[in-house]
Image (cartoon, rainbow, N blue to C red):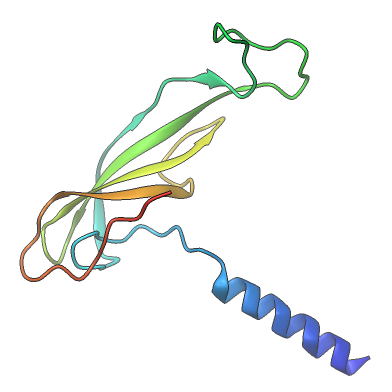
Length: 117
């Protein structure tokens, strides 16, 4: 019984540390010390839509959703990074990041990278 608990705890820890991270970090220097500059909500679309873009009324769990794009500036190297956040009913900068893209180069050598879907 004790070995099953230990195996379950180890499996949870492995899953936690191996899952993909969607964190906000600088695309130039990989620093987590960044400041929010601006953000915009994308166009709202239905989760399930017809060919013409109208709401599919056959689905009960159909709702409008939108992506969110935010821009952050690094406090260490002054680079600007743009993030595309996951679509949601209430889009905002707290949602998971789907894509990270460098907008303006920072100071020093680049250690970070862009992150794609």
